[in-house]
Image (cartoon, rainbow, N blue to C red; front, side):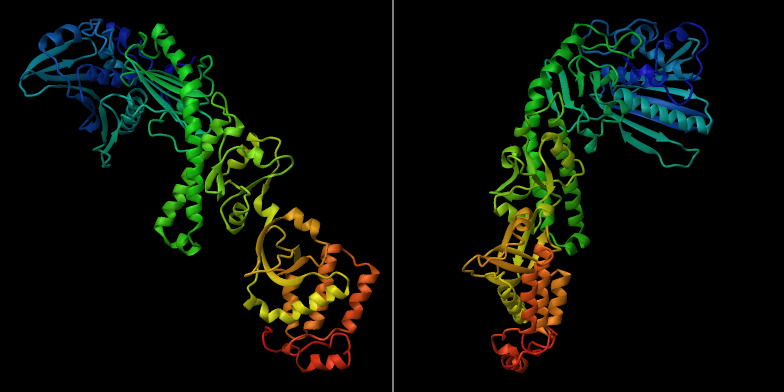
Length: 630
Protein backbone atom coordinates (compact mmCIF):
# COMPACT_ATOMS: atom_id res chain seq x y z
CA UNK A 1 0.00 0.00 0.00
CA UNK A 2 1.42 3.35 -1.02
CA UNK A 3 -0.56 6.44 0.04
CA UNK A 4 0.35 9.82 -1.38
CA UNK A 5 2.80 10.46 1.44
CA UNK A 6 5.10 8.04 -0.42
CA UNK A 7 5.34 10.44 -3.41
CA UNK A 8 8.05 12.85 -2.28
CA UNK A 9 8.58 16.29 -3.79
CA UNK A 10 11.86 17.29 -5.42
CA UNK A 11 12.64 19.83 -2.73
CA UNK A 12 12.36 19.79 1.02
CA UNK A 13 9.10 20.83 2.61
CA UNK A 14 8.95 24.17 4.46
CA UNK A 15 10.31 24.09 8.01
CA UNK A 16 7.88 23.19 10.74
CA UNK A 17 6.07 26.04 12.50
CA UNK A 18 7.13 27.03 16.00
CA UNK A 19 6.20 24.51 18.71
CA UNK A 20 2.64 24.74 19.90
CA UNK A 21 -0.88 23.57 19.05
CA UNK A 22 -0.69 24.79 15.45
CA UNK A 23 2.56 22.88 14.87
CA UNK A 24 1.01 19.76 16.33
CA UNK A 25 -1.98 20.11 14.02
CA UNK A 26 -0.18 20.74 10.74
CA UNK A 27 2.23 17.85 11.23
CA UNK A 28 -0.61 15.44 10.51
CA UNK A 29 -0.80 16.61 6.88
CA UNK A 30 1.49 14.45 4.70
CA UNK A 31 1.52 17.07 1.92
CA UNK A 32 2.00 20.66 3.18
CA UNK A 33 0.32 21.95 0.01
CA UNK A 34 -2.81 20.00 0.88
CA UNK A 35 -3.99 23.25 2.49
CA UNK A 36 -5.35 24.12 -0.98
CA UNK A 37 -7.50 21.00 -0.92
CA UNK A 38 -8.77 21.95 2.53
CA UNK A 39 -9.72 25.47 1.42
CA UNK A 40 -11.41 24.13 -1.72
CA UNK A 41 -13.25 21.62 0.44
CA UNK A 42 -14.46 24.38 2.79
CA UNK A 43 -15.75 26.34 -0.18
CA UNK A 44 -17.60 23.32 -1.58
CA UNK A 45 -19.09 22.60 1.83
CA UNK A 46 -20.32 26.22 1.83
CA UNK A 47 -22.14 25.58 -1.45
CA UNK A 48 -19.65 27.27 -3.78
CA UNK A 49 -20.19 26.92 -7.52
CA UNK A 50 -16.92 28.61 -8.50
CA UNK A 51 -13.58 28.72 -6.74
CA UNK A 52 -10.68 30.90 -7.90
CA UNK A 53 -7.11 30.19 -6.77
CA UNK A 54 -4.52 32.89 -7.44
CA UNK A 55 -0.77 32.86 -6.82
CA UNK A 56 0.97 36.16 -7.47
CA UNK A 57 3.94 38.29 -6.56
CA UNK A 58 3.44 41.51 -4.60
CA UNK A 59 6.03 44.15 -3.71
CA UNK A 60 8.26 42.26 -1.31
CA UNK A 61 5.85 39.38 -0.83
CA UNK A 62 3.88 36.50 -2.38
CA UNK A 63 0.12 36.14 -2.03
CA UNK A 64 -1.78 32.87 -2.41
CA UNK A 65 -5.54 33.32 -2.27
CA UNK A 66 -8.56 31.04 -2.55
CA UNK A 67 -11.89 32.75 -3.24
CA UNK A 68 -15.27 31.02 -3.33
CA UNK A 69 -18.85 32.16 -3.91
CA UNK A 70 -20.25 30.00 -1.12
CA UNK A 71 -22.45 31.00 1.78
CA UNK A 72 -19.77 32.94 3.68
CA UNK A 73 -19.58 33.14 7.50
CA UNK A 74 -21.19 35.13 10.28
CA UNK A 75 -19.23 36.41 13.27
CA UNK A 76 -20.36 33.48 15.39
CA UNK A 77 -19.05 31.05 12.72
CA UNK A 78 -15.65 32.75 12.83
CA UNK A 79 -15.32 32.92 16.58
CA UNK A 80 -16.75 29.44 17.05
CA UNK A 81 -15.94 26.61 14.61
CA UNK A 82 -13.24 28.45 12.63
CA UNK A 83 -11.08 29.62 15.51
CA UNK A 84 -11.57 26.67 17.86
CA UNK A 85 -9.24 23.79 17.12
CA UNK A 86 -11.04 20.47 16.64
CA UNK A 87 -14.45 22.17 16.52
CA UNK A 88 -16.37 21.42 13.31
CA UNK A 89 -19.72 22.78 12.25
CA UNK A 90 -20.04 19.90 9.73
CA UNK A 91 -20.20 17.05 12.23
CA UNK A 92 -23.12 14.76 11.42
CA UNK A 93 -23.88 16.44 8.06
CA UNK A 94 -23.43 13.75 5.37
CA UNK A 95 -23.49 16.39 2.63
CA UNK A 96 -20.22 17.88 3.93
CA UNK A 97 -16.76 16.44 3.40
CA UNK A 98 -14.89 17.83 6.42
CA UNK A 99 -15.59 16.08 9.70
CA UNK A 100 -12.69 16.67 12.06
CA UNK A 101 -12.52 20.46 12.25
CA UNK A 102 -8.76 20.58 11.64
CA UNK A 103 -8.56 21.38 7.92
CA UNK A 104 -8.29 25.15 8.14
CA UNK A 105 -5.20 24.93 10.35
CA UNK A 106 -3.35 23.39 7.35
CA UNK A 107 -2.82 26.90 5.94
CA UNK A 108 0.10 27.21 8.36
CA UNK A 109 1.89 24.16 6.88
CA UNK A 110 3.80 26.31 4.36
CA UNK A 111 4.88 28.85 7.01
CA UNK A 112 3.01 32.02 5.94
CA UNK A 113 3.81 35.18 7.83
CA UNK A 114 0.11 36.04 7.90
CA UNK A 115 -3.26 34.61 6.87
CA UNK A 116 -6.12 36.99 6.03
CA UNK A 117 -9.72 35.81 5.86
CA UNK A 118 -12.40 37.96 4.28
CA UNK A 119 -15.96 36.65 4.44
CA UNK A 120 -19.35 38.18 3.76
CA UNK A 121 -23.03 37.24 3.91
CA UNK A 122 -26.35 38.79 4.85
CA UNK A 123 -25.02 42.22 3.82
CA UNK A 124 -22.14 42.14 6.35
CA UNK A 125 -18.41 41.52 5.79
CA UNK A 126 -15.74 40.51 8.31
CA UNK A 127 -11.95 40.53 8.12
CA UNK A 128 -9.85 38.10 10.16
CA UNK A 129 -6.06 38.25 10.50
CA UNK A 130 -4.35 35.10 11.79
CA UNK A 131 -0.80 34.52 12.96
CA UNK A 132 1.05 31.24 13.39
CA UNK A 133 1.21 31.73 17.17
CA UNK A 134 -2.63 31.34 17.15
CA UNK A 135 -3.20 35.04 17.87
CA UNK A 136 -5.71 36.81 15.65
CA UNK A 137 -7.53 40.07 14.96
CA UNK A 138 -11.17 40.23 13.87
CA UNK A 139 -12.70 43.43 12.52
CA UNK A 140 -15.91 44.61 10.96
CA UNK A 141 -15.28 45.16 7.22
CA UNK A 142 -18.54 47.01 6.64
CA UNK A 143 -21.52 46.22 4.48
CA UNK A 144 -21.14 43.98 1.40
CA UNK A 145 -23.67 42.39 -0.92
CA UNK A 146 -23.69 38.71 -1.83
CA UNK A 147 -21.79 35.97 -0.08
CA UNK A 148 -18.40 34.31 -0.23
CA UNK A 149 -15.01 33.86 1.41
CA UNK A 150 -11.43 34.71 0.46
CA UNK A 151 -8.44 33.26 2.29
CA UNK A 152 -5.06 34.86 1.52
CA UNK A 153 -1.66 33.58 2.64
CA UNK A 154 1.17 36.13 2.67
CA UNK A 155 4.82 35.04 2.49
CA UNK A 156 8.21 36.59 1.82
CA UNK A 157 9.77 34.57 -0.99
CA UNK A 158 12.62 35.07 -3.41
CA UNK A 159 11.67 34.94 -7.07
CA UNK A 160 13.16 31.44 -7.39
CA UNK A 161 11.20 30.30 -4.35
CA UNK A 162 8.04 31.86 -5.82
CA UNK A 163 8.43 29.84 -9.03
CA UNK A 164 8.77 26.64 -7.03
CA UNK A 165 5.84 27.60 -4.81
CA UNK A 166 3.62 28.20 -7.85
CA UNK A 167 4.64 24.84 -9.32
CA UNK A 168 3.81 22.97 -6.14
CA UNK A 169 0.50 24.77 -5.75
CA UNK A 170 -0.47 23.77 -9.28
CA UNK A 171 0.60 20.15 -8.67
CA UNK A 172 -1.38 19.99 -5.43
CA UNK A 173 -4.57 21.28 -7.04
CA UNK A 174 -4.25 18.80 -9.90
CA UNK A 175 -3.61 15.97 -7.47
CA UNK A 176 -6.29 16.69 -4.91
CA UNK A 177 -8.99 18.66 -6.72
CA UNK A 178 -9.02 17.67 -10.40
CA UNK A 179 -12.40 15.92 -10.17
CA UNK A 180 -14.09 18.53 -7.95
CA UNK A 181 -17.80 19.01 -8.44
CA UNK A 182 -17.47 22.77 -8.81
CA UNK A 183 -15.49 24.96 -11.19
CA UNK A 184 -11.91 25.63 -10.06
CA UNK A 185 -9.60 28.05 -11.88
CA UNK A 186 -5.93 28.64 -11.10
CA UNK A 187 -4.16 31.84 -12.13
CA UNK A 188 -0.45 32.52 -11.65
CA UNK A 189 0.96 36.03 -12.05
CA UNK A 190 4.67 36.73 -11.72
CA UNK A 191 4.66 40.53 -11.89
CA UNK A 192 8.33 40.85 -11.05
CA UNK A 193 9.33 38.42 -13.79
CA UNK A 194 7.36 40.36 -16.43
CA UNK A 195 5.82 37.09 -17.64
CA UNK A 196 2.26 36.78 -18.87
CA UNK A 197 -0.24 35.60 -16.28
CA UNK A 198 -1.48 32.05 -16.82
CA UNK A 199 -5.01 30.75 -16.30
CA UNK A 200 -5.85 27.05 -16.01
CA UNK A 201 -9.04 25.13 -15.41
CA UNK A 202 -8.36 22.49 -12.77
CA UNK A 203 -11.61 20.51 -12.57
CA UNK A 204 -12.09 17.73 -15.14
CA UNK A 205 -14.66 14.94 -15.53
CA UNK A 206 -14.20 11.71 -13.61
CA UNK A 207 -12.49 9.36 -16.10
CA UNK A 208 -9.85 6.66 -16.34
CA UNK A 209 -7.03 6.25 -18.85
CA UNK A 210 -8.38 3.27 -20.78
CA UNK A 211 -9.26 2.17 -24.30
CA UNK A 212 -12.85 1.64 -23.19
CA UNK A 213 -14.63 2.28 -19.91
CA UNK A 214 -18.04 2.07 -18.27
CA UNK A 215 -19.59 4.55 -15.86
CA UNK A 216 -22.25 3.51 -13.37
CA UNK A 217 -24.11 5.84 -10.99
CA UNK A 218 -25.83 4.10 -8.11
CA UNK A 219 -27.22 5.73 -4.95
CA UNK A 220 -25.02 8.87 -5.16
CA UNK A 221 -21.96 6.70 -5.87
CA UNK A 222 -20.21 6.94 -9.24
CA UNK A 223 -17.99 4.16 -10.59
CA UNK A 224 -15.70 4.49 -13.62
CA UNK A 225 -13.97 1.27 -14.66
CA UNK A 226 -11.67 0.39 -17.56
CA UNK A 227 -8.84 -1.99 -18.51
CA UNK A 228 -5.22 -0.86 -18.45
CA UNK A 229 -4.25 -3.05 -21.42
CA UNK A 230 -3.90 -1.12 -24.65
CA UNK A 231 -4.21 2.34 -23.10
CA UNK A 232 -0.65 3.24 -24.11
CA UNK A 233 -1.72 3.23 -27.77
CA UNK A 234 -4.03 6.22 -27.37
CA UNK A 235 -3.89 9.76 -26.00
CA UNK A 236 -4.89 9.80 -22.38
CA UNK A 237 -7.82 11.91 -21.12
CA UNK A 238 -7.13 15.35 -19.69
CA UNK A 239 -7.70 14.10 -16.14
CA UNK A 240 -4.68 11.79 -16.32
CA UNK A 241 -2.21 14.22 -14.74
CA UNK A 242 -0.92 11.70 -12.26
CA UNK A 243 1.70 9.14 -13.30
CA UNK A 244 -0.02 6.60 -11.05
CA UNK A 245 -3.03 6.63 -13.37
CA UNK A 246 -0.86 5.09 -16.09
CA UNK A 247 0.07 2.05 -14.04
CA UNK A 248 -0.79 -1.56 -14.81
CA UNK A 249 -3.51 -1.16 -12.19
CA UNK A 250 -4.95 2.00 -10.63
CA UNK A 251 -7.46 2.74 -7.89
CA UNK A 252 -8.84 6.15 -6.97
CA UNK A 253 -11.33 7.06 -4.23
CA UNK A 254 -13.04 10.48 -4.02
CA UNK A 255 -15.67 12.35 -2.09
CA UNK A 256 -17.43 15.02 -4.17
CA UNK A 257 -14.46 14.83 -6.53
CA UNK A 258 -11.78 15.59 -3.94
CA UNK A 259 -9.10 12.95 -3.69
CA UNK A 260 -9.14 10.68 -0.66
CA UNK A 261 -6.65 8.08 -1.87
CA UNK A 262 -5.03 7.04 -5.14
CA UNK A 263 -2.61 4.19 -5.76
CA UNK A 264 -1.00 2.20 -8.54
CA UNK A 265 0.83 -0.04 -6.06
CA UNK A 266 -1.83 -1.50 -3.83
CA UNK A 267 -3.44 -4.42 -5.67
CA UNK A 268 -6.98 -5.34 -4.76
CA UNK A 269 -8.06 -8.95 -5.21
CA UNK A 270 -9.53 -9.63 -8.66
CA UNK A 271 -8.70 -6.18 -10.02
CA UNK A 272 -5.24 -6.63 -11.52
CA UNK A 273 -5.12 -4.94 -14.92
CA UNK A 274 -8.04 -2.67 -14.03
CA UNK A 275 -8.11 1.10 -13.63
CA UNK A 276 -11.05 2.38 -11.63
CA UNK A 277 -12.33 5.38 -9.71
CA UNK A 278 -15.08 5.54 -7.11
CA UNK A 279 -16.67 8.79 -5.96
CA UNK A 280 -19.08 8.55 -3.06
CA UNK A 281 -20.24 10.63 -0.07
CA UNK A 282 -19.96 7.42 1.95
CA UNK A 283 -16.20 7.30 1.51
CA UNK A 284 -14.22 9.27 4.11
CA UNK A 285 -10.59 10.20 4.59
CA UNK A 286 -8.48 9.22 7.55
CA UNK A 287 -7.43 11.73 10.19
CA UNK A 288 -4.12 12.28 8.36
CA UNK A 289 -6.08 13.03 5.16
CA UNK A 290 -3.80 10.92 2.96
CA UNK A 291 -5.83 7.70 2.80
CA UNK A 292 -9.38 6.39 2.65
CA UNK A 293 -11.01 4.73 5.61
CA UNK A 294 -11.25 0.95 5.14
CA UNK A 295 -14.82 0.60 6.34
CA UNK A 296 -17.91 -1.17 5.02
CA UNK A 297 -18.50 1.49 2.38
CA UNK A 298 -14.98 0.94 1.06
CA UNK A 299 -15.27 -2.85 0.77
CA UNK A 300 -18.73 -2.62 -0.76
CA UNK A 301 -17.37 -0.28 -3.41
CA UNK A 302 -14.60 -2.75 -4.32
CA UNK A 303 -17.10 -5.58 -4.63
CA UNK A 304 -19.20 -3.50 -7.03
CA UNK A 305 -16.13 -2.66 -9.13
CA UNK A 306 -15.43 -6.39 -9.57
CA UNK A 307 -18.99 -6.95 -10.74
CA UNK A 308 -18.70 -4.13 -13.27
CA UNK A 309 -15.50 -5.60 -14.70
CA UNK A 310 -16.98 -9.08 -15.18
CA UNK A 311 -20.24 -7.90 -16.69
CA UNK A 312 -20.80 -4.41 -18.10
CA UNK A 313 -17.15 -3.68 -18.95
CA UNK A 314 -16.66 -6.86 -20.99
CA UNK A 315 -19.99 -6.32 -22.75
CA UNK A 316 -19.04 -2.73 -23.56
CA UNK A 317 -15.73 -3.86 -25.02
CA UNK A 318 -17.44 -6.56 -27.10
CA UNK A 319 -19.89 -3.96 -28.44
CA UNK A 320 -17.33 -1.24 -29.15
CA UNK A 321 -14.67 -3.41 -30.80
CA UNK A 322 -16.61 -4.08 -34.07
CA UNK A 323 -17.38 -0.37 -34.36
CA UNK A 324 -13.71 0.52 -33.87
CA UNK A 325 -12.62 -2.08 -36.44
CA UNK A 326 -15.08 -0.81 -39.04
CA UNK A 327 -14.17 2.82 -38.35
CA UNK A 328 -10.45 2.08 -38.77
CA UNK A 329 -11.08 0.29 -42.06
CA UNK A 330 -13.46 2.93 -43.42
CA UNK A 331 -11.13 5.84 -42.66
CA UNK A 332 -8.16 4.01 -44.18
CA UNK A 333 -10.18 3.26 -47.34
CA UNK A 334 -11.21 6.90 -47.67
CA UNK A 335 -7.62 8.00 -47.34
CA UNK A 336 -6.47 5.41 -49.90
CA UNK A 337 -9.00 6.81 -52.38
CA UNK A 338 -7.23 10.20 -52.45
CA UNK A 339 -4.39 10.77 -54.87
CA UNK A 340 -0.81 11.42 -53.83
CA UNK A 341 -1.10 15.01 -55.02
CA UNK A 342 -4.24 15.55 -52.98
CA UNK A 343 -2.57 14.10 -49.88
CA UNK A 344 0.43 16.38 -50.34
CA UNK A 345 -1.48 19.61 -50.97
CA UNK A 346 -4.67 19.37 -48.97
CA UNK A 347 -5.12 20.41 -45.35
CA UNK A 348 -8.22 18.23 -45.33
CA UNK A 349 -6.05 15.30 -46.36
CA UNK A 350 -3.77 16.00 -43.40
CA UNK A 351 -6.75 15.93 -41.09
CA UNK A 352 -7.91 12.71 -42.73
CA UNK A 353 -4.49 11.16 -42.14
CA UNK A 354 -4.61 12.24 -38.50
CA UNK A 355 -8.10 10.80 -38.11
CA UNK A 356 -7.01 7.54 -39.70
CA UNK A 357 -4.07 7.27 -37.31
CA UNK A 358 -6.27 8.01 -34.29
CA UNK A 359 -8.84 5.39 -35.28
CA UNK A 360 -6.16 2.81 -35.98
CA UNK A 361 -4.69 3.48 -32.52
CA UNK A 362 -8.12 3.30 -30.88
CA UNK A 363 -8.77 -0.08 -32.48
CA UNK A 364 -5.31 -1.39 -31.48
CA UNK A 365 -5.97 -0.29 -27.90
CA UNK A 366 -9.33 -2.09 -27.75
CA UNK A 367 -7.87 -5.16 -29.46
CA UNK A 368 -5.15 -5.46 -26.84
CA UNK A 369 -7.77 -5.09 -24.09
CA UNK A 370 -9.82 -7.85 -25.74
CA UNK A 371 -6.78 -10.16 -25.60
CA UNK A 372 -5.85 -9.40 -21.98
CA UNK A 373 -7.43 -10.47 -18.69
CA UNK A 374 -9.71 -9.60 -17.04
CA UNK A 375 -11.52 -8.38 -20.18
CA UNK A 376 -10.30 -11.08 -22.61
CA UNK A 377 -12.85 -12.14 -25.25
CA UNK A 378 -13.15 -15.36 -27.27
CA UNK A 379 -10.66 -15.04 -30.19
CA UNK A 380 -13.33 -16.18 -32.64
CA UNK A 381 -15.54 -13.28 -31.52
CA UNK A 382 -12.87 -10.62 -32.09
CA UNK A 383 -13.41 -8.62 -35.31
CA UNK A 384 -10.52 -7.37 -37.41
CA UNK A 385 -10.62 -4.49 -39.91
CA UNK A 386 -10.25 -5.43 -43.58
CA UNK A 387 -8.07 -3.60 -46.05
CA UNK A 388 -10.88 -3.92 -48.63
CA UNK A 389 -14.52 -4.72 -47.89
CA UNK A 390 -15.61 -8.30 -48.52
CA UNK A 391 -19.29 -8.57 -49.48
CA UNK A 392 -19.82 -5.11 -47.97
CA UNK A 393 -18.18 -5.97 -44.63
CA UNK A 394 -15.42 -3.62 -43.46
CA UNK A 395 -14.55 -5.93 -40.56
CA UNK A 396 -14.76 -9.65 -39.98
CA UNK A 397 -14.62 -11.95 -36.96
CA UNK A 398 -13.91 -15.67 -37.03
CA UNK A 399 -10.73 -15.37 -39.09
CA UNK A 400 -9.60 -18.81 -38.00
CA UNK A 401 -12.49 -20.34 -39.97
CA UNK A 402 -11.59 -18.20 -42.99
CA UNK A 403 -8.03 -19.55 -42.96
CA UNK A 404 -8.41 -23.28 -42.18
CA UNK A 405 -5.55 -25.74 -41.96
CA UNK A 406 -2.23 -24.31 -43.06
CA UNK A 407 -3.72 -21.37 -44.97
CA UNK A 408 -2.07 -18.11 -43.87
CA UNK A 409 -3.80 -15.05 -42.50
CA UNK A 410 -3.20 -12.28 -45.02
CA UNK A 411 -2.39 -8.71 -43.97
CA UNK A 412 -1.77 -5.37 -45.65
CA UNK A 413 -0.88 -1.88 -44.46
CA UNK A 414 -3.37 -0.21 -46.80
CA UNK A 415 -5.99 -0.89 -49.44
CA UNK A 416 -4.79 -1.13 -53.03
CA UNK A 417 -5.74 -2.73 -56.34
CA UNK A 418 -4.50 -6.14 -55.11
CA UNK A 419 -6.58 -6.15 -51.91
CA UNK A 420 -9.60 -4.97 -53.90
CA UNK A 421 -9.19 -7.87 -56.33
CA UNK A 422 -8.74 -10.32 -53.46
CA UNK A 423 -11.89 -8.96 -51.80
CA UNK A 424 -13.86 -9.51 -55.01
CA UNK A 425 -12.63 -13.10 -54.92
CA UNK A 426 -13.83 -13.43 -51.32
CA UNK A 427 -10.36 -13.35 -49.77
CA UNK A 428 -10.24 -11.17 -46.62
CA UNK A 429 -7.04 -9.21 -45.97
CA UNK A 430 -6.59 -7.84 -42.44
CA UNK A 431 -5.77 -4.15 -42.34
CA UNK A 432 -2.63 -3.65 -40.22
CA UNK A 433 -2.11 0.11 -40.39
CA UNK A 434 -0.96 0.35 -36.78
CA UNK A 435 2.46 -0.94 -35.60
CA UNK A 436 0.90 -3.22 -32.98
CA UNK A 437 -1.81 -4.91 -35.06
CA UNK A 438 0.29 -7.71 -36.58
CA UNK A 439 1.67 -8.76 -33.20
CA UNK A 440 -1.82 -8.68 -31.69
CA UNK A 441 -3.19 -10.73 -34.59
CA UNK A 442 -0.49 -13.34 -33.97
CA UNK A 443 -1.32 -13.26 -30.27
CA UNK A 444 -4.96 -13.91 -31.08
CA UNK A 445 -4.11 -16.84 -33.38
CA UNK A 446 -0.73 -18.16 -32.17
CA UNK A 447 -0.80 -21.24 -34.44
CA UNK A 448 -1.60 -19.35 -37.63
CA UNK A 449 0.89 -18.19 -40.26
CA UNK A 450 0.70 -14.50 -41.10
CA UNK A 451 1.81 -13.33 -44.53
CA UNK A 452 1.81 -10.03 -46.34
CA UNK A 453 -0.84 -10.12 -49.03
CA UNK A 454 1.62 -8.65 -51.52
CA UNK A 455 4.07 -11.47 -50.81
CA UNK A 456 1.48 -14.24 -51.10
CA UNK A 457 -0.78 -13.04 -53.95
CA UNK A 458 -0.42 -11.22 -57.24
CA UNK A 459 -2.71 -9.24 -59.46
CA UNK A 460 -2.22 -9.77 -63.20
CA UNK A 461 -3.49 -7.03 -65.52
CA UNK A 462 -3.16 -7.62 -69.25
CA UNK A 463 -2.06 -4.63 -71.29
CA UNK A 464 -4.84 -3.30 -73.55
CA UNK A 465 -4.78 -4.36 -77.20
CA UNK A 466 -3.71 -0.89 -78.31
CA UNK A 467 -0.57 -1.22 -76.17
CA UNK A 468 0.16 -4.73 -77.47
CA UNK A 469 0.08 -3.79 -81.18
CA UNK A 470 3.62 -2.46 -81.12
CA UNK A 471 4.86 -5.82 -79.82
CA UNK A 472 2.77 -8.07 -82.08
CA UNK A 473 5.78 -9.41 -84.00
CA UNK A 474 7.69 -10.18 -80.79
CA UNK A 475 4.72 -11.99 -79.25
CA UNK A 476 4.24 -14.02 -82.45
CA UNK A 477 7.89 -15.13 -82.50
CA UNK A 478 7.79 -16.13 -78.82
CA UNK A 479 4.62 -18.17 -79.35
CA UNK A 480 6.09 -19.98 -82.39
CA UNK A 481 9.39 -20.57 -80.66
CA UNK A 482 7.69 -22.21 -77.70
CA UNK A 483 5.54 -24.32 -80.03
CA UNK A 484 8.58 -25.50 -82.01
CA UNK A 485 10.26 -26.37 -78.71
CA UNK A 486 7.18 -28.46 -77.81
CA UNK A 487 6.12 -26.03 -75.09
CA UNK A 488 3.25 -24.41 -76.90
CA UNK A 489 0.71 -22.21 -75.12
CA UNK A 490 -2.73 -20.91 -76.05
CA UNK A 491 -1.45 -17.37 -76.54
CA UNK A 492 1.25 -14.90 -75.50
CA UNK A 493 0.44 -11.42 -74.21
CA UNK A 494 1.85 -8.56 -72.16
CA UNK A 495 0.83 -7.75 -68.58
CA UNK A 496 1.59 -5.78 -65.46
CA UNK A 497 2.06 -7.67 -62.19
CA UNK A 498 1.26 -6.16 -58.79
CA UNK A 499 2.22 -7.97 -55.60
CA UNK A 500 4.22 -11.20 -55.53
CA UNK A 501 6.45 -12.43 -58.40
CA UNK A 502 6.64 -8.98 -59.95
CA UNK A 503 10.33 -9.60 -60.76
CA UNK A 504 9.58 -12.60 -62.97
CA UNK A 505 9.85 -12.33 -66.72
CA UNK A 506 6.56 -14.13 -67.35
CA UNK A 507 3.88 -16.23 -65.70
CA UNK A 508 1.55 -18.96 -66.93
CA UNK A 509 -2.18 -18.73 -66.21
CA UNK A 510 -5.11 -20.83 -67.39
CA UNK A 511 -6.41 -19.50 -70.70
CA UNK A 512 -9.65 -17.60 -70.22
CA UNK A 513 -11.36 -18.49 -73.49
CA UNK A 514 -13.48 -15.79 -75.07
CA UNK A 515 -12.61 -12.37 -73.66
CA UNK A 516 -14.49 -9.09 -73.90
CA UNK A 517 -11.46 -7.05 -72.80
CA UNK A 518 -8.01 -7.26 -71.22
CA UNK A 519 -7.56 -10.09 -68.77
CA UNK A 520 -7.35 -9.23 -65.04
CA UNK A 521 -7.17 -11.79 -62.26
CA UNK A 522 -5.80 -12.45 -58.79
CA UNK A 523 -3.76 -15.57 -57.97
CA UNK A 524 -1.92 -17.18 -55.10
CA UNK A 525 1.81 -16.95 -55.74
CA UNK A 526 2.35 -20.58 -54.77
CA UNK A 527 -0.12 -21.70 -57.46
CA UNK A 528 1.65 -19.63 -60.10
CA UNK A 529 5.05 -20.99 -59.05
CA UNK A 530 3.70 -24.56 -59.14
CA UNK A 531 2.44 -23.93 -62.67
CA UNK A 532 5.57 -22.11 -63.83
CA UNK A 533 7.11 -24.99 -65.83
CA UNK A 534 3.87 -26.34 -67.29
CA UNK A 535 3.85 -24.86 -70.78
CA UNK A 536 0.64 -26.36 -72.17
CA UNK A 537 -1.90 -25.46 -74.82
CA UNK A 538 -4.46 -24.72 -72.12
CA UNK A 539 -2.31 -21.99 -70.59
CA UNK A 540 -1.66 -18.40 -71.59
CA UNK A 541 1.78 -16.87 -71.18
CA UNK A 542 1.89 -13.28 -69.87
CA UNK A 543 5.12 -11.34 -70.34
CA UNK A 544 5.81 -8.92 -67.47
CA UNK A 545 6.47 -5.48 -68.98
CA UNK A 546 8.36 -4.45 -65.81
CA UNK A 547 10.88 -7.28 -66.18
CA UNK A 548 14.36 -6.26 -67.34
CA UNK A 549 14.51 -9.32 -69.63
CA UNK A 550 11.22 -8.49 -71.35
CA UNK A 551 12.07 -4.79 -71.60
CA UNK A 552 15.40 -5.63 -73.30
CA UNK A 553 13.68 -8.00 -75.75
CA UNK A 554 11.08 -5.37 -76.63
CA UNK A 555 13.78 -2.86 -77.44
CA UNK A 556 15.70 -5.42 -79.55
CA UNK A 557 12.52 -6.43 -81.37
CA UNK A 558 12.29 -2.96 -82.87
CA UNK A 559 15.28 -3.98 -85.02
CA UNK A 560 15.17 -7.77 -85.06
CA UNK A 561 11.97 -9.35 -83.66
CA UNK A 562 12.96 -12.88 -84.68
CA UNK A 563 16.21 -12.94 -82.75
CA UNK A 564 14.66 -11.03 -79.85
CA UNK A 565 11.68 -13.41 -79.69
CA UNK A 566 13.79 -16.58 -79.88
CA UNK A 567 16.18 -15.38 -77.21
CA UNK A 568 13.29 -14.28 -74.98
CA UNK A 569 11.59 -17.67 -75.34
CA UNK A 570 14.85 -19.37 -74.37
CA UNK A 571 15.25 -17.05 -71.33
CA UNK A 572 11.69 -17.69 -70.20
CA UNK A 573 12.12 -21.46 -70.39
CA UNK A 574 15.33 -21.19 -68.35
CA UNK A 575 13.52 -19.01 -65.78
CA UNK A 576 10.65 -21.48 -65.50
CA UNK A 577 12.44 -24.85 -65.80
CA UNK A 578 16.09 -24.18 -65.04
CA UNK A 579 18.87 -25.32 -67.41
CA UNK A 580 17.39 -26.64 -70.67
CA UNK A 581 17.71 -30.29 -71.61
CA UNK A 582 19.64 -31.00 -74.84
CA UNK A 583 16.50 -31.59 -76.94
CA UNK A 584 14.94 -28.22 -75.96
CA UNK A 585 18.22 -26.45 -76.59
CA UNK A 586 18.68 -28.04 -80.03
CA UNK A 587 15.14 -27.16 -81.10
CA UNK A 588 15.55 -23.53 -80.09
CA UNK A 589 18.91 -23.27 -81.86
CA UNK A 590 17.41 -24.77 -85.01
CA UNK A 591 14.56 -22.30 -84.80
CA UNK A 592 17.00 -19.41 -84.54
CA UNK A 593 18.81 -20.67 -87.64
CA UNK A 594 15.62 -21.36 -89.60
CA UNK A 595 12.88 -19.06 -88.33
CA UNK A 596 9.35 -19.49 -89.77
CA UNK A 597 7.83 -16.60 -91.76
CA UNK A 598 6.03 -13.89 -89.82
CA UNK A 599 2.32 -13.48 -90.53
CA UNK A 600 0.75 -10.17 -91.55
CA UNK A 601 1.88 -7.13 -93.45
CA UNK A 602 4.30 -6.14 -90.77
CA UNK A 603 6.85 -8.79 -91.73
CA UNK A 604 8.17 -6.49 -94.54
CA UNK A 605 10.59 -7.22 -97.31
CA UNK A 606 13.21 -8.94 -95.15
CA UNK A 607 10.56 -11.23 -93.72
CA UNK A 608 9.44 -12.14 -97.27
CA UNK A 609 13.03 -12.90 -98.23
CA UNK A 610 13.34 -15.22 -95.28
CA UNK A 611 10.54 -17.37 -96.78
CA UNK A 612 12.79 -18.15 -99.72
CA UNK A 613 16.14 -18.32 -97.97
CA UNK A 614 16.95 -18.65 -94.30
CA UNK A 615 19.25 -15.84 -93.20
CA UNK A 616 22.30 -16.26 -90.99
CA UNK A 617 21.69 -16.28 -87.20
CA UNK A 618 20.95 -12.82 -85.91
CA UNK A 619 20.10 -11.34 -89.31
CA UNK A 620 16.44 -12.40 -89.76
CA UNK A 621 13.23 -10.47 -88.96
CA UNK A 622 11.27 -7.63 -90.47
CA UNK A 623 12.50 -4.06 -90.66
CA UNK A 624 11.06 -1.42 -88.40
CA UNK A 625 7.47 -0.92 -89.41
CA UNK A 626 4.05 0.09 -88.23
CA UNK A 627 3.39 -0.73 -84.58
CA UNK A 628 7.02 -1.40 -83.60
CA UNK A 629 8.48 0.93 -80.97
CA UNK A 630 11.51 3.00 -81.90
